[in-house]
Length: 280
Image (cartoon, rainbow, N blue to C red; front, side, top):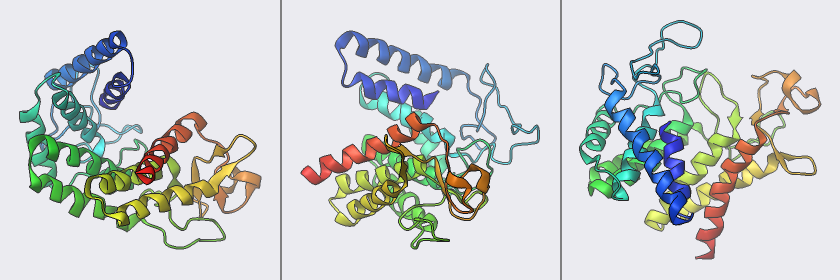
């Protein structure tokens, strides 16, 4: 919900006044509902899942207890929404942003799976999103301690997921694997990592961050298929998903199906940002 509301704010920035006003209204209502109804997890963080009335839903999809109830990176999108509304002067959530960021930082980061069918405490995309959210919150709150955490813990944490060589004859060098229990390289998550590095370059001027972002985009570009540039969902370098799901049923390789619109839109955003940055 919060991510969709953030996207409405982004679209509103480039659309006509009437549609912008409507998008702002929906985003404000979304944030207000979350703030007023979603019950916090025991540690005060946003729970991984909530019921329709905002009560905590503590179960996993298979019916067991969710081990990441209070550790999922999903809650970062709520902080992002509060930050974007406050930055635009559409609401003032500074107090709640501070509360949630303090909880996140006191825990050393809450990087549990955003993907709702995995249960790792450390998932690469959560580090990317955490950097992007906390760097924005740091600017809004004028707090360098938040910015240092964003760089030193969140962005640096992506190093643990980097693949530095091609494996099993598959082009994996430059990509990031998802997490320890599910180590396929999913390209929408790599797009988020590229965005994190490119935004870090835009903030600091450090060309190493630019290089890191471009490395990911170049690595992803090795996994397009067919006449229309189909972008694979993921690069399965160790047959975790199963060869029946690979192109030509190869033992190791690209997954042959995806949500092509979703994945291609994800990769477009950092690609456009990279072009903009290199033009400047």
